[in-house]
Image 1 (cartoon, rainbow, N blue to C red):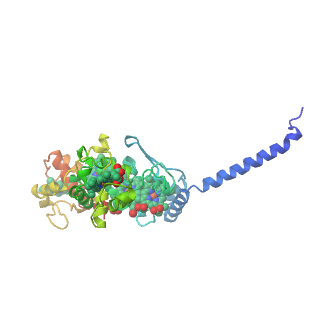
Image 2: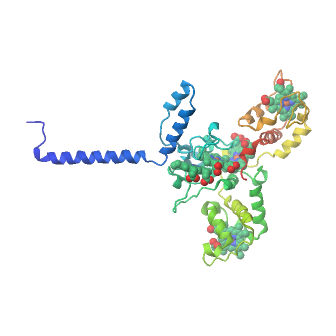
Image 3: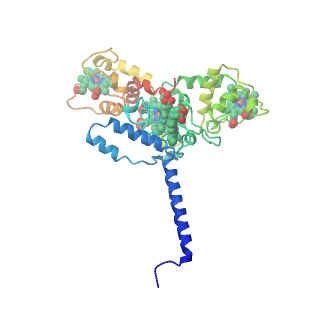
Amino acid sequence: MTLQPPAKLMPWFLLSSVVLFVLMLLVCVQDHRRPWKPYQRAFIELERKAAKTPAEQQSINSFRMGIRQIEVPSLGRVDRCTTCHLAVNHPDYADAAHPLRSHPDTGHHSFEEFGCTVCHRGNGLATSADEAHGRTSDATSPMLPASFVSASCLACHDLNSLPGVENLKTGRCLFENNGCQTCHSLNGTGGLIGPALDGVGQRRGIDWMIRHFKNPGAESPGSAMPPVQLEDYDIERLALYVSGLVDPVTDPFFTSKKVLPNPQAGRDLYFNRGCIGCHQLEDVGGNIGPDLSQLGQRGKASRLRFVLETPLPNASMPHPKLRPDEREALISFLINLNATDFKAEE
Ligand code: HEC
Ligand code: HEC
Ligand code: HEC
Ligand code: HEC
Ligand code: HEC
């Protein structure tokens, strides 16, 4: 009895180990070539260069390469965009090239709670740029170009109360004034010649819509829809609004601010309740209290809410007695003063 295998099996053993070796090599090469790896390597490289203290170097050494994801169960989303867009929260990367550039301020929408695709669309699970951005021919959800992202705000917010989004508001006027609803219904009102437009932003990408509005027959042969007679920039604004027609989010956390506190009302309170008497705002006002011009920066809303809610025993500021809606309006006015870098559109 020997432990040697029978001699006639030896060539097979040899062959199977060679096959195994080749397979392992292939796996390694494939792994090395994963489309997100170069960006993670570039990130590590940049971090190494920037590291000054031993603690910072330590933290780079503990960086683990791999797929990152943000899960948002209440929105039914798993977004892996941060596998490549690693520095969205990283202020030092404001001038870096994509995908390593830091994100413009998103106010109260934290990436941990919102993920990415609820605003950008695209394919959250994908880990290659073309698939994630929905550029492949079989893409089900093309990403919105950056200047069209404000279409997504409508999934959660009432348009009238949204600050800023002027192109979106113009888009709605164009929709209302160009007879679209003689043929299309929306929320149960309108004609029946064309399909209902509820949820159309989920079915049709922005590029298709723009082409279709200019020449419906070319996209839908035999279409009864007349070409939209508007300048290109108005066609784009119309398409921006129509892309915002998606099934509304229903989760109570995300719809808690459906109607946003109106910053205009907050501005009026600021002047009428005497805040201006003690605080400077853009060089106007008293100087008994601190200048409030910089409050729009990230993270200040909670401080503001605290100050306005809680009467402090030794504070030199009289406690402003505000109703909750007044308080929110004031906060929204003050934090939106500097929110220019979260402009939703050009
Ligand atoms: C495999 C890496 C990778 C993944 C995954 C990825 N991106 Fe990107 N992204 C890039 C690269 C590279 C660029 C810059 C070049 C380009 O546009 O392709 C970019 C650019 C962008 C831009 C700006 C350019 C534009 O076209 O407007 C946005 C917005 C963006 N990505 C959003 C997302 C979102 C949202 C996701 C997740 C659904 C995502 N990305 C997933 C690599 C990635
Ligand atoms: C609350 C909505 C919202 C969420 C959530 C969000 N973004 Fe954005 N994002 C925007 C808006 C709006 C802009 C455009 C800002 C501008 O152009 O002024 C933008 C811009 C970008 C850009 C730059 C595009 C350019 O052309 O420079 C990238 C890249 C990007 N987002 C990626 C992401 C990724 C990755 C996530 C998730 C980690 C994410 N975003 C989450 C709203 C959002
Ligand atoms: C998935 C739902 C959702 C989407 C999409 C969304 N928001 Fe919000 N938004 C919220 C919620 C929830 C809050 C309140 C967050 C909080 O106070 O913690 C909020 C707060 C705000 C506020 C109040 C000020 C602040 O930052 O707290 C503004 C302004 C705002 N959103 C604008 C926008 C714009 C512009 C877009 C589109 C780029 C957008 N939102 C997209 C859910 C959403
Ligand atoms: C005379 C009737 C008529 C008018 C007016 C009209 N449409 Fe249409 N529309 C149609 C018909 C019919 C279709 C289906 C065939 C096609 O795709 O072109 C359609 C298709 C569409 C679609 C694609 C719907 C889907 O589910 O794929 C969109 C989006 C749309 N129209 C938007 C508009 C807008 C915006 C306006 C106003 C500027 C407008 N339509 C005016 C008849 C009309
Ligand atoms: C009589 C003068 C006075 C009036 C009126 C007043 N404040 Fe103040 N406020 C102060 C002073 C002084 C401080 C400095 C902190 C302290 O000691 O209370 C302060 C602090 C603050 C802070 C904290 C700033 C920070 O950076 O932490 C906020 C926010 C604020 N006030 C907002 C308001 C608003 C909004 C109103 C109007 C409803 C208002 N204040 C009315 C005097 C005033």
